[in-house]
Image (cartoon, rainbow, N blue to C red; front, side, top):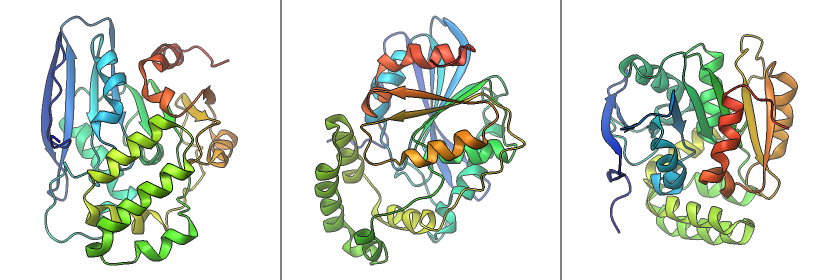
Length: 283
């Protein structure tokens, strides 16, 4: 199997460039830029995938979108594509650090300006919300799939997270078995299986340790951006309570219900998101 962390997509009619962007603490994270030869939608889209997600899980929607609009795809630093400097610590892989990274990427990539649409998932969605609160960027619109306000790991998994990284390979196999039992959507099962098998286990462990103590401050008084919260009833992994809490606090929040988490990774969701991005209120 090809390394999912260094492959560069080949899309007809689209110029794809992969860059390693230097962060404020000298880490390097990978950002892919998709530029269509013929642009139909002039508003760039910034996509921040979820925890440790590999490109393959987003390939269909990215490549469909990239044929008509510019797409910037950001791989956050818990992913194996990032290049670390110095000793790995929990703080290296915290949400606060990811927010700082988004700031560094914005400063070094002029395309990411105030007129972009943002689309993010899970941990990426949480980080984008925190960046909005911190004033890291402004946006035309933000669409968030299954954001988290905290990370409640199953009770059985908490002692395992504390174990040394040396023991993680067999634990990853067990996690795959657990998710196969828990998840209802076949596409979601496949994505998580691929993601876990491709993971950097040391980063995965430290990221889990850091995220385990995270609790979002729900003061969004400074945020007036139009935000769509995307939720799927069949998604057994992400709690609907986070969406409910956020809807109570977001001034310009809307809910988009989709049939499944997998649907939100497929091109079929594009017209729904583009309608919201243009200003239509979700029904």
